Length: 278
Image (cartoon, rainbow, N blue to C red; front, side, top):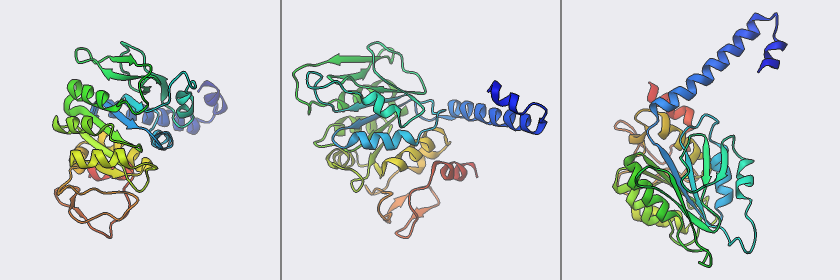
């Protein structure tokens, strides 16, 4: 920043522009913290999920201050040492790290459940708890314990995503999050390499909406910082809207608007924010 200001020395218009940009960045951060509707984002993913995670995280801005906790199914450490943290770090300005036991959640960070274990949220103080389990099959549920513990501590301020994966991990936990008033979004089956997990969550919660990973990022940003956006994502008649498919009739997006089959794809976060600011 000092080097940039030096380049504009003698150019007051340039200095004013930098100050304006800095002020805007600070406003974005403070606005996010003040109005955010959710205190944690929990994500379930398995087969085909790493690519989806990268696409999703690439859409989150550096000022995204809601902690993200990911339960991604991985092979055992005795077979290989996962570098998922480094892989995902290439896609996001947020800090990606493996979860540590008794760690306090912080904004701007993405926490990964251990390669050979699971992560939950302590019901007393909200810290992360990690449990190592060696010798258990890869299909051992990692998302359900995380989702249920998040619902227990954060209640209706929990936002859950279920991405590509085989079997049904995450569905039971998503149901619990929905029961306490949290929100559940899933990756659209048409964009998921393996659609079992998002389909199961959608069927069991009856309230999930489906988007491709990039559109999921826009939806999460809007849900987190736009006042009233949570109601925008309320579903009627167990219908869902996939950004990859034409939007079905029967989906109520606001009290005044209904999406029909000629609707455009899922809006960006900025478009959603403009709609709630009007």
